[in-house]
Amino acid sequence: MPRLTFWYEFASTYSYLSAMRIEAAAALADVDVTWQPFLLGPIFKAQGWTTSPFNIYPAKGRYMMRDVGRIAAARGLAFLMPEPFPANALKAARLAVVGTLEGWVAPFSKAVFEAEFAQELDIADEAVLRDILTGLGLDAPSLFARSGEPEIKEQLRTATAEAEALGIFGAPTFVTSDRELFWGDDRLELALAHAKQNS
Amino acid sequence: MPRLTFWYEFASTYSYLSAMRIEAAAALADVDVTWQPFLLGPIFKAQGWTTSPFNIYPAKGRYMMRDVGRIAAARGLAFLMPEPFPANALKAARLAVVGTLEGWVAPFSKAVFEAEFAQELDIADEAVLRDILTGLGLDAPSLFARSGEPEIKEQLRTATAEAEALGIFGAPTFVTSDRELFWGDDRLELALAHAKQNS
Image 1 (cartoon, rainbow over the protein chains, first blue to last red):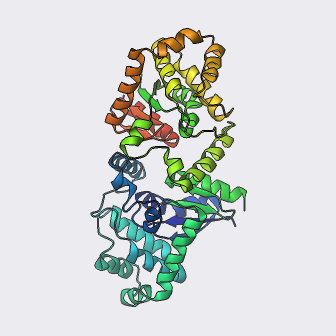
Image 2: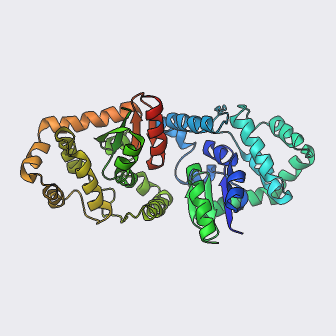
Image 3: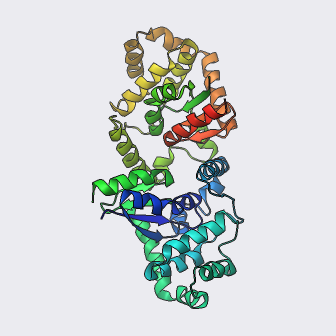
């Protein structure tokens, strides 16, 4: 079966758009998707940015809010901007790494994005993450403990380094098995088509 | 009739993609398009950039070449990267301003983009621009003289200042009559749909 890796960052508005539709789009295209959380912070830092480009370049930030707002509305999705933006996604990303090992990364990630961009909750807040885990029928205390283990922290660092090595500079990025990159929610269809043609 | 303004910069690869398809797409959608050349240089400079972001951020530049290459190939368009990149588009843009006044801006602009990205020619070279004008049956010497007049220079400066005032930070950008911005070749369909719904 053709495969695609979905590289996403929880603080990313366009990653939210993709997370909410990639399962249906991939199923329709018969493509198998691997959810791969990573952190954009270290990659931005290597480019000399200490925050989101949407904060550094205000015109770009204002446009992003209109653009994502229009697309979300057309898809029947809520879209609100949480404070602070970008959220500190470290804890959520470590939990998601545990989810990749245990099989619940997709529903967890969608719930995190919804809390953040549909309910304006701060996903750096452990109470928010606990409610999400509990809502999925998962054992929050043991998963918080697990997500703080050196192995999990290291796995997230490795994923972020791998993203950079692949040439990823933003999120979402879809990567096919022949290492072609497709950046942005608006490239999902092209990525799925490429995955099918080159599997 | 619904209207849309197509803001483009000759050095921009994604503007090339839009220039080659906007007439057909707009005709199909029954939308009237105004071609509006401007310069990104002053806008980039205001953001602290002295060259294209595709040069400042190499991963982004490499990706852009793959992305535009794939899209151009799918549309049956050639795509080559001219040296230097970005081209100095000042002379071409001033000529295009004359074209907006005289009615030949669209065929001229498409010919400039083709010379640049299909034939790898340097559009800063007056000989290249002269061949384009002559090829369109226009009188090159008188148009070069006209494009150097203070009124034309001022008109290009005004257009660029208007772009910045509209919140434009990249090209192509499509602007509807209710001042909604749509950035990027991949937003052309949304821009046309918005123009129709809000005319």
